[in-house]
Length: 377
Ligand SMILES: *Cc1c(COP(=O)(O)O)cnc(C)c1O
Image (cartoon, helix red, strand yellow):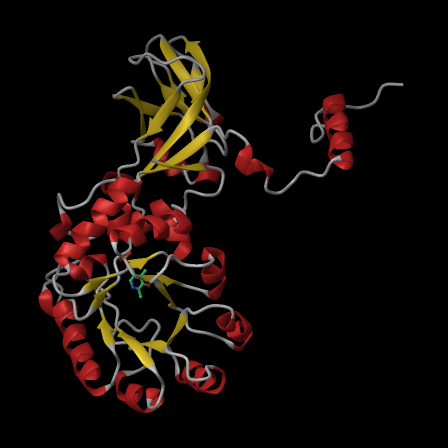
C-alpha cells in the first residue's frame, strides 16, 4: 500500500521524527546548549564605555540604566552584571515579571518597576526589594495598603500624557509614603530645540520642590544631553547604552554594542537572468555567487530590510538580494570571498538602519527575537 506523503510531516522522515519526539520530549532548556546558526554578539566593553560616557555627561547626577524589555533585547542579566561592575547602582524594568526574571541583583544595586503595580503584583512585590513606580492614584492607594511602609517611587506626568500622576494631585496622593525617587519623563528629548522640553522641565521642577522625595530623576538617554538643568539627581539612560544614537547631541559619543551575525548555509552560482527568492523579484545581471544565510524576518530581519540591507564578509559589504524569507536571506557575495560555513556580519548600524527602514532604533533592537545565541564579548 502506498502511504500518501504529507507535506506537513515530510513523509517517512517526519513520522520517524514524530516517534522520536514522543519517546523523548525535548528539554525546553536544551537549546541554550546547542550551537545556534545565528548569533547576537553583545560587546560588554562597548556597553560599559557607553555607560561611563553617560555617567560623565550626567555630571553630579547619579547614572542608572533602563534594562526593561530584557535590556532592549540584549539580555538584562549580563547587562546588569557588567554595569554594576562599572558602578551603576539603579536599574529600571517595566514589569514585575521582568524584575523576577532578573533574579538577585549584584550587591548594592537597586531596581524600580516603571509600570507600578496592580493587585495581581502584590505577591511579587513581597518577593523582592524592587520599588514600584506609582503612576496613578489607585496604585498609590494600593501601595499604601500593601506596601507595609516599604519605599516606593512615583512618576509625574508633565505633559506627555503617558503614565504618571498629574502634578496637581501628586502631593496629596503621595503624602506619607516613603518616597525614594520622584520621576518625570520627556516626550521630545531627541529634539533638543523642541519647546516641550523646557515646558516639561519647569513643570517637573515645580512638583519636585513640592513633593518630598529623596531623589528626583527626569532624563532618559537624550535628556541627559540637554543640559544640567535636565539631570536632577539621577538619570535613566537606555537606548544610548545599547549603542543607539539618542539625539543629534550624541554624535561620536557612543559605540555600537549589538552585532548580529548569521551562518552561510549554501553558496550557489546563478547566471544572468536567473532569479532569487520568493516572487522572483531579483534577477541576476551578471554571473553571481549567492550566499543563503540563516537569518530571516522571524529573527527581526524584516522584509523591508531587503532594500538597502547589507551583510559584511571580512569587511566587504554584500547587498541583500530578493525577498527576505522567514528564516533565510540571500546575499550577493560575488565580490567577496565566502564559502559555506562562514559567518556573515549583519550590517545593523542602528541610525543607518533606522533611516533605511523607517523603524526606530528602539524597534530595531527589541525586535531581534529569541533565536539568536547571545554571546558576550
Ligand atoms: C525606557 C525609559 C527610559 C530610557 O529611555 P531611552 O530613551 O531608551 O534612554 C527612561 N525612562 C523611562 C520612564 C522609560 O520608560
